[in-house]
Length: 186
Image (cartoon, rainbow, N blue to C red; front, side):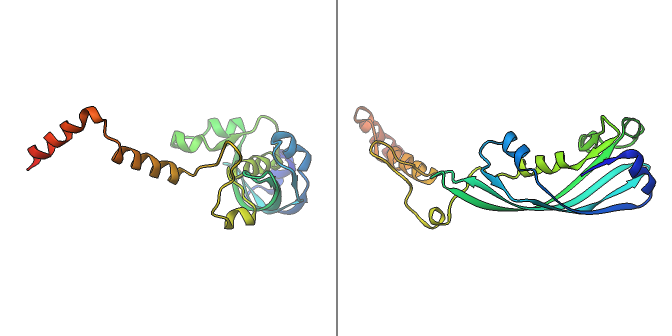
């Protein structure tokens, strides 16, 4: 998934279509140790070449195997991503005028005369890894795991517990003051 700029410049004013299946298993596992396996990645898209730069649009489909965040059992996670990237040479980037800084920050300035889409694909896959992955059984179950001296508690349970504690506990030394404020309100 690498193209030399000299080769791409032959297609200036048009686009280069591509459809490939790539294997990034080793590099993704090295960058993110929690990935157990990744199926071959189907990439379909195009590179548009013009005087302003190089625009890549692609769809990426793969299946990741990652551990469940509760039980560490392997879970297959299908990913279907749409990736849009804009590349420019340093000369093209410096020639930009009337472009807001926020838009300039989205442009990838090429350090070599080469566009490597595998880096973008890897980055997008890693950015789209969910923080919570559950097996089908864990999704269906309402009971959270627990052990002898520990248990997993949901945020809702914590909030509910805190609310009930604040409502029901009044310091006995201040109990008479609460009656005082009730009389003032009437």
